[in-house]
Length: 142
Image (cartoon, rainbow, N blue to C red):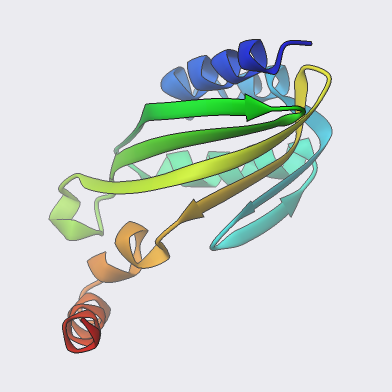
């Protein structure tokens, strides 16, 4: 299977994914998917679907802009910017976070998905009080 076609399908699914169509995850992920991001580690498609259900139920919107991707053997690397709005973060205003994903394919399905992004930019900097402390530390360290 041409992994670039599989990556294109991954991008297509993520561009339209929301709380009402999480069944689309079955088109790109294997039943034994191992998903890791800086905040979670999930095993299995059903647990991943529940994780996404929780994420999407708490945000006003979430959109991914894919900036680049490439493949090598059964690996793919996808670079993105996520834009989202959560009513309790950043006064409900849009938050943008850059990151990338490493995908490992078995045939046309993803068996491992690891996201890399700055959890502070995603979440911690936008929590009242905690965000002020993190911004202070960032300024002192920089």
